Length: 127
Image 1 (cartoon, helix red, strand yellow):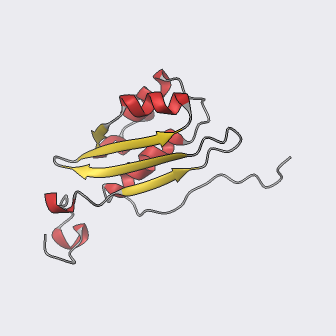
Image 2 (image 1 turned 60 degrees about the vertical axis):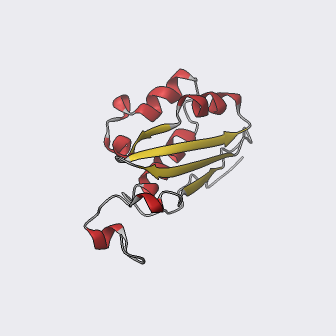
């Protein structure tokens, strides 16, 4: 790919191998448990994405050990067929844990299937 070119200017092609060192990083603030998680997604050949997860949460660490790489199009699958959710359920993460969604958002942005934008949950009337 030419310097300064993007996937949109190259017909949506996956980036060439010299661009694999660029990465998407997501910080997940989980709320009351306090175990902040850092997720890094990095493109690999053949529409694969390497995943690196750092957290003080033991359950998230189990997920990190089992999910080192996945396909970029996991985000398009139904929830019950998604590798990220499948592995998260085996850890077992708390049902409302935001980390699996953070992983998918990182994959989505790294694969250029969506723009990297903050997302969140905000309680309007906290206790």
